[in-house]
Image 1 (cartoon, helix red, strand yellow):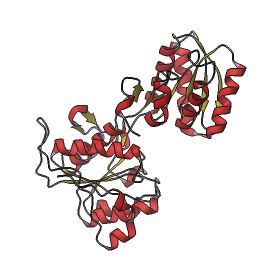
Image 2 (image 1 turned 180 degrees about the vertical axis):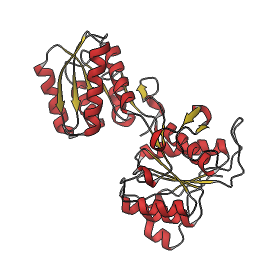
Image 3 (image 1 turned 30 degrees about the vertical axis):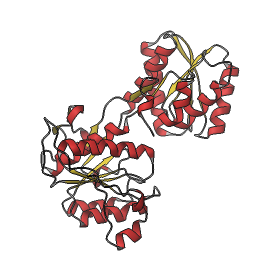
Length: 343
């Protein structure tokens, strides 16, 4: 039997005052062959940024699968609003209830650190995923992808879609966005080094504003009539660009890829505007985070650089510098698999 009370837990203060009941999402099934097994004594509490978010619903589904395989109990709690203040009571409650491990997507890198420190002092292992805290506030961070992998997959996708030649442009978020600029710099280097027939003609900024991104797409097509492809490493930008292309005469002539979510991009993949795009798989992220948390809770690893552990169907992982475990390369969504995701 599996119990679900995710939505109700949004009333954090009231629920806590009344002795909040946590969600029990797993641990009642048989351990999968080849797993470490377990007797359900270990409890892993998932604390996403907020509940009701399809992205985190998907990551929790992966955590539940990991819990079933490991034979540990996986519980999900969280606020309705994505704020660090709203996460703190759930951290405190998990520690008071003596859960063995807490898996958190932090709404702020420092604001929840005091609560996490108290939880760790009480013996709870802390794993961050999706969004990290300062390293000293947790044991391990499960990172969904690194900058090099994100840049590489976007260049690979556009090169494949345009036959590895022609003019391409980048539609980014804000000009001072650190992560975007790091990815663009790496993409420029990859194109220069390995794709001599691709020319990066421009980088424009939509400021993660839907209408501005839409307008910038139109301006690119007007300024560069021979444009073969657009890379948009931002979910707002790629969906706005896809919306423009889908009704323009550039559809089918100008390729578009980048970073997006399946729910945003599904209609444009299905109507042929977009062939493929990338992001990470949040189900795999939750799955790996749960295996990591269980390994810490069981004492199989201590979170030190060089520690290794098995993560079910994903294989062996090694803890890297600063206590980071990297999920792997970004996941590519296309017409064959986009129907399998809802976030």
